[in-house]
Image (cartoon, rainbow, N blue to C red; front, side):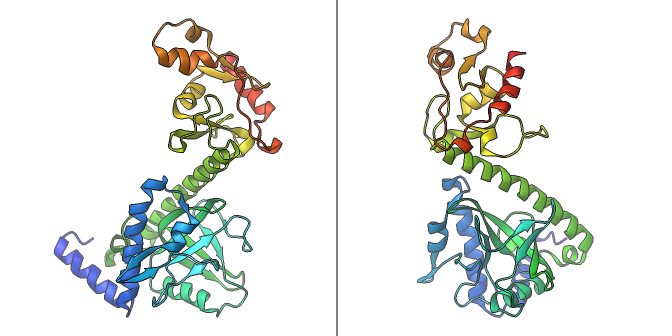
Length: 321
């Protein structure tokens, strides 16, 4: 491990030079990592496709970050910058297990320039960005990811995540690169964490879309204050990440629902716990909780997205107890 900052800077500079002959590739990749860190917080880490496609300006040139083809190499770069998985796309990209993503070739020709580009990125351990669609036209950016395997017979690459950070930080010291076991374990852990985060983000986006970005109890419509609450908890074997097992709730009512202060009957009527109804306190208790008693839940328009009555019954019995 390189601890001296000067030595580390020298190592990074050397590795950058060795990794690519094009300084433009390095500048683009470095700025892309920085730009994603800058724009992601304002969008709660869920980026609209138009913003990603537009990208940023660098030295008077507009740099885009993705294309419809999935594997994207910006003009003038030596390696692909990003890979993308879209909803209902033509390629069956999927997690093979908790630790690896199977990413399909572009087309069926292993020697297509995009497939060759990812193969070169794998050979040179180049960090990329992975855009994963959590809803139609909305993506989470996972960085860095690395191409760690190539299977021409199945027309797939294996992609794994690693520790989040800057582009320079994604360039590993020689001692860690050489320690393949340590690198593999770290990437397995990082990819498993990414998979959980992507599933949670996808569930939230689908639930909020179904409820038209409103709290199902109080109708609050500030997206940044809304959660996707599981009816049957995700820790339960029956707590599937389906919209029919979710409710869009503001943070207060999500907490109240999780802690049994409010419940929802299978006929979509909200109940407030009896002892809470008898309390005397300020306007938040009166209007934020007690006023919900015997009111009706806001429902999604699509019948398939409406809360499962079986799930509500299961949860309601816990509330009653």
